Image (cartoon, rainbow, N blue to C red; front, side, top):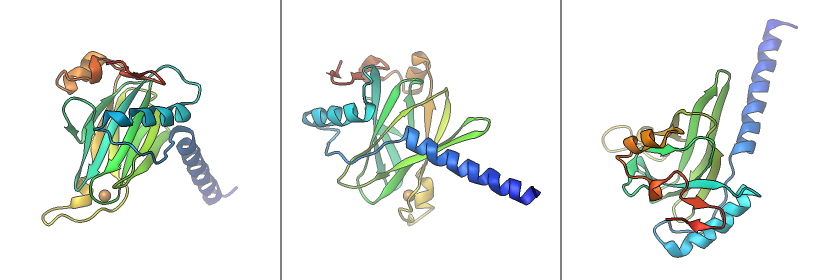
Length: 198
Ligand SMILES: [Cu+2]
């Protein structure tokens, strides 16, 4: 084969691999839920039970609010702007919404020497999307906004909507990053069907 053909085939394979990664790891749906309202938790747990299938182990919920122009992450007691920590090897459920315009919460990372993780879900005012993902290894995962959401009067606007997800199996390290404030003091504040343990 010609070199050009080989290169073209390689890129087709990369695209197919990227698409199958997205199908495998991300799942999103619209669920009616207000993260500040405990009464909505039953709805969330029902939706997550669907998404997680037969899985009965612990998982972590991270609420993500997009706005012009930053990401807010909680349920840490404090809101963290453009930064959150997640465990490794345990499902992380991102519940995503926007308080102003459409954004897209998009996670990018090189997860191995030849594999790049790319997936996201819409952040829509009035709706909640979610992604369930098991972070396979410790590291820094880059967050971007993948939907153009405007220009600031001064500066870049949309381009500022970036963030970092620190994936670590070390709860002590994670607590240092978050100033010691962890959801219910554990990596496993929720389990499927069991509601909050804290
Ligand atoms: Cu944007």
